[in-house]
Length: 474
Image (cartoon, rainbow, N blue to C red; front, side):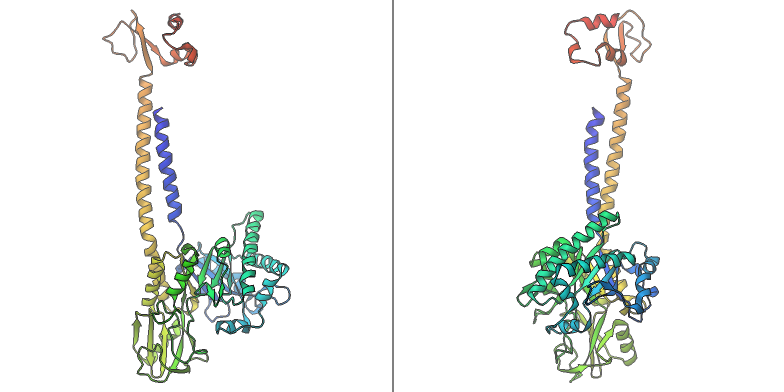
């Protein structure tokens, strides 16, 4: 009886600790894109700094709606998973699908695109089926563990409705494929706008909640010189003069009941250079501008920004109102995320209890991976407290279980030594463990009593007939 009673609290504590362990072990996402057409060699990617890496981009055929990879980059797709796992065997790799072509540029600029292969795919069930089956086959063929859809510029009601259908069908297909093949289910992710609405349209939030492992928010490219004639904080975390900022967008996603545990914040490792009319506008934000600078389209990687500011001078300052860095070199003005901005944004992610971060794109970091290392350090700090608490709980649980086991074992041994029951007196001398000063006591062993009572049957209760005594005597 003692051992049984003790086992219940042991089991309870064990189950609670296991449940706590599982809930505390949720992965902090540190994801990032690597573009197969970039000049940054894949073997040089420090995959140890990430939990997920996304290979970009697979294309969609205009007539079959099946996936294809650029022939010039075929080797990059086929070797991606193998190469990044050399430095980080536990990393998860995903294949990204992009809307692509000129239509995407139009949508980024807020213009309505007349044609998009993905929009055509959405319209027809058979087209969606072809796309879904192909995406799964291509991902498996190249050894990817998930699929990512980069299409955050849905701007018609039919897009929103059909996207809901696509996500439902996609999730059902990847679940079925995993069940039938005994392979781990493919992760399913999607890039989304910084807010869940576009004019009067709303993302299919319920379908996204059901079907996506996470959605990563494109929290950058808010202001571009291609459509504005004043400088703007392209990745502002806050902006008290406008709704176009990350904080506002995240709050909107949460207000529409999208779970924080499925939101991943996009971090840009790129920025833009502007030509400003008056270099004395040191803060630069909102200053009159005449277009882009430095590169042919004004875009600059963080690596290039660091080189440019070292080479041409200019004081880098941090604007905590918007949480961005900026630098003026002559008439050239650049705002960008430096290590300080990255840390502030990750602190924001933790405060909002989001799932993690996603970088666009990893090859834009500097030579020492300063941005990614800062993101990793901040992310590790996020995981330290739950892990420490988990260690404490498991340690205490182990001690409690050990003590309970010792008590249980001691009680069993004690019962064994007392397994002889005194039923009456006898003139014979006992050699048992009973006190030798009581020679007139008759001693019976537990095994004898068990046989005499027919395994303690209720029909043979002591004191109800007296025949048990005679049976023992006989």
